[in-house]
Image (cartoon, rainbow, N blue to C red; front, side, top):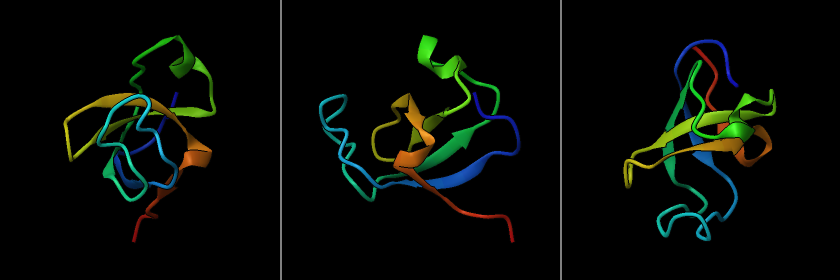
Length: 70
């Protein structure tokens, strides 16, 4: 589970097996303190709400490029 501020992120892997719009480059927001499955309780996952389709899934942090605060 991710703790912190809501952050912009980009998917860097192909997850079309979970949703047809989740291709590399899909943008969304990393949502703090939210889990969508049992996997989301692990500290290596964060819940991401994607812009393209509105889907929200727990995604491995290594599968995301997270924009840093400016």
